[in-house]
Image (cartoon, rainbow, N blue to C red):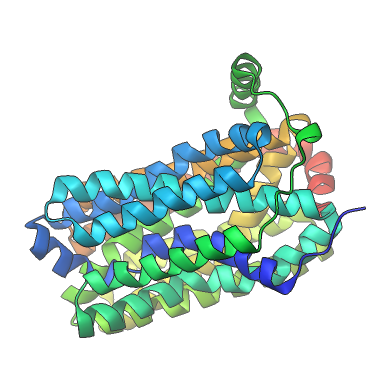
Length: 406
């Protein structure tokens, strides 16, 4: 019989889940002023986001096996300490090279909370209870990409960009205190698995060679890549259209709101018409949003309004694609779901990291080019999805079963 989760432990899990998103988003409105401080180009500052996401992406493959062998709490505390020290380092840093190294360490540290919090919940709750728990904390996680830039915009406009990292340092410190005094070890020694590199490597290759897994993985990867292409360009797009840092921060609220609404809508539709039909609808909405975003950059007389509106349509579709695509990918290899989950997370965040890095190079921060890239990428994504439907039909029943059990 598994335990219940107390309110204070639920608060800690929420903090751990939010950490990576806050570390990514809080300084978005301050990118321009940070670039001036470090004498860095806009492309350089976008690279600081990409390298953070790269750290999260790679570390997801490492924390899982290590925590299964050594236990949850001490590995978590190590990761949180890395996150804390690297964030203090960013606050004190004076040159761009130091910033990049520290941002990579930030990603590696923040990833501990994201990855290990899921394992802790799995230790404490059965599948049904875990699903209900995630539904409880999801609105907070889903809204964090809006709340963090709003906080960052207010802080940077009034106290300078370093105040964003001071706020983040305090947030991490509170998280460490909660972890020390609230969290008890949830994986007893008798349930720990000896680390076996050979077995892990063979199973990883097996998952990566499995066609349906790769097909379904492409769904959240394209969704994340295109979303982050907009996110890292948005401070430059919206600033060029006349918005100040604080107003740029407020603009992310609609994106998080539509994402949460998309997720709620998708859950209702999936129960009525099935997962596959819901993904179909979500991808159509996603593609329409990407296409309209590209068009409006050329023809809109009110580009601020239409930019936010059309990208909100895309993020509404993301509310369908991210949870259902991820569940479908992992559900396609039920015998290796743990490894598949780590690979899926790595690929998903990795695609966001690559997108964050290359969008500035390809667009040169030109609004029209950014619109074309997002529209074309949306078209490529839906084309790959449509062409792969033959494989999807073979595994649809198994995947629907897996998702319903989440």
